[in-house]
Length: 320
Image (tube, rainbow, N blue to C red; front, side, top):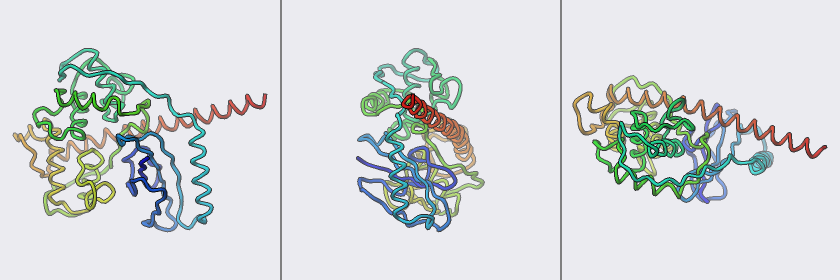
């Protein structure tokens, strides 16, 4: 089994990208040394399946020097026991096979199944209303195209810029490949992509340095435009320097959303220059993900409350 450990301040991580990834691997233990005494940190430990999708997770918090090592071990064990005793959300069976070419204007059951699958994978068509989880439609509109483009940016980087957002043979094949490998659960915090929230105010290019470069790298990694698989620029190891690998990731972002970033300025290929049109799209994606995070947090809190009520009902039944 592979695990991913995330750390966050102020609130608990709710998804596999919501926070700093401080460890991923098959080890049995990990010591976090990059902490400050007196600061509360929240940790989420996710178990990942063979396709690197999360199945279960536990959340704990700690303040360095607040407890002894023995007390911390006991607290983590207690939290883990509470999670294993809880009932997991019911599984969602998804067995549909995609066979048709789809684009803006397409209609039919295959469109509804596509929206459902994208929502389950975390590439939300919408955070509320038509197209959102449980409210999928039979119409392929711009929101569906945008979700398909984000799916392609993560899983099919070789799809030509002009085909982004279209469901052709390569995209259908990848969708069908993922159907049997993903252990689906009802839309929840686990299926919500979370990204950083930051206001970019200046153009960035190769050679730029600063906090905004660091935040841009975090955003790109969280959205699937990963700078590097390890070392500087990789998830959890972002830097404040805009180099060639940052430029390459920006190019992939621009080409994934070519209609909104490149076409308005008469370009057909990404430049890697983080200018006004690219900033506008990034800010739009951030606003969308922030709404998704709020909904996911509420869903998670509702689920926890339901499980607590169920546990109390069982205790009452045992006393009767």
